[in-house]
Length: 255
Image: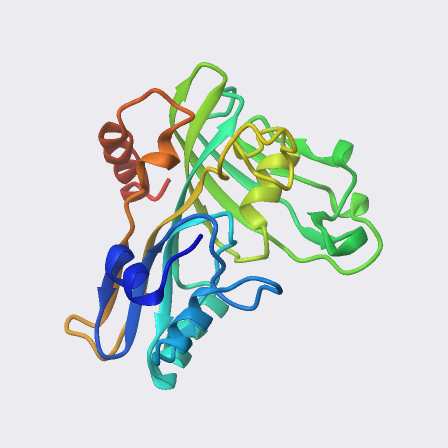
């Protein structure tokens, strides 16, 4: 994606104050630290603006990204992610519509060959409780380090052989949502980790909402929302406004 910082900042700004900057990042640009790629932090630095990522989303994921403009705020905000008190919500369009209305993916992650994130157990060991909880027994965990990983989801809509989901990742592991969904048989549409067809222009995963404590603000909180662009909704022929309204109701009910 070719765009200078001033254009990107103006077009995708969600919120800013003296301490933070929040953007609705388009799919296809990295936040920071990607080899061989220009990223948001690098673009900002080249334009004279120093920013510190509070969290990260993948290059292929669109949506809300929060950056700190000073180190005090950065520390206060990153601690909330580390302590799992940040309130995060994502939207995804997945293959397959046979998901329950609500579910919990309680599947530890590990790292396999070539540093690829995977479920830390054989695929056939994944169980579904019948009440919408996917899990693996401790006895089935592979040797090596594993990382407890928890994602809640609610099904917003079903259309044909696809579903729109609202998701709340409790933990924040690398590729967590993408791997969790793919390993239960519902990969995100267009996810290059699991779809090599090239039939889609992007992965249909979007960082939608963030809620954090922000002591320097009055009231002392950040409530941020990034509306998905039209490209996110392309795989489903449904009304985006109606889908967002339904997703908000589900999130308000804590899924």
